[in-house]
Length: 217
Length: 179
Image 1 (spheres, each protein chain N blue to C red):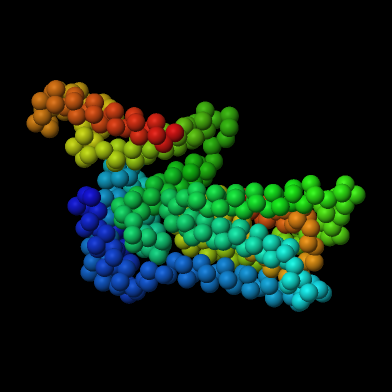
Image 2: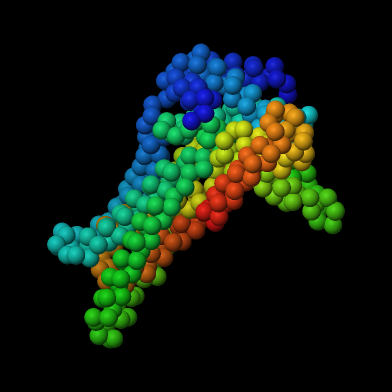
């Protein structure tokens, strides 16, 4: 390759130059990840449906705590995705928000256990869907993981594992948010453990896949 | 802020709003800077030098939406250049297919480490004033003598020593803070 070749390349790149809006990066991320969430939500409603007691659950605390827990984690994941999509992006503040959210959920779970008789522990921890819950969250996260990584690939992440983990956190938490419309478990320990596990597994998958899939072509 | 940064950032902003002439000027200056950047790291006569320059220009173009308009342009450009260099070295060694019992196989990671260490040094050096940086670069990195550097820069030998001492002290405290 020669310097002449570089001049020619510059000519090619400049030809047909299109303006770029400053909101372009955010718009593309919203579109890509939004598409994944939509697929996940439609699939969830068609296969599992809303929880049978949906309208009466609206008046209960746990119903909203599940959305707060998963929503805050999804927000932290989304911010991390936005930051890590740029070269040398970092996500320290996001780690703090995510950490505090997990801590708050753990505190709620522990305090519920401490104020309950021992005989209730099994029900509070295992509910009736403990073994299915994390896997369903991972399953419904797949569309978001795919569209999220796909979109991230067109950006310029330089910390690939971390960027993959951020996509995974967002996918897992958004999927858990969607899943909460169907799941009628309301014990805090159950949510902390099994929702947390589903989100954690998805985050790890994102990190593992991201370190390879996010390499620039 | 450096004059180059102000100039390049202005060109980039104009380019992002669709001004082809500014964008062409930007890519021209960027190509020259990248050529220097890679020449210092892999050698000016390296076969892959111009390939790396072109690949980086293409990445700059296709990924230009990731430039944050409120941040320095040169930092963004260098981050992309650095990624491309590491990526090149990694894939270069992967494709070379060196087996483990081949003594050459051990060079891969070492070279990469040396290169990233070099990159870290360069990044740190970018934080001290330009003149001090050149002095430190000449003496500590390129291994030239104080007399030579003094003759080349027109500063007295003691002035060179004092400037370097201050610069190194600033770097040391920076390293301590980042640990």
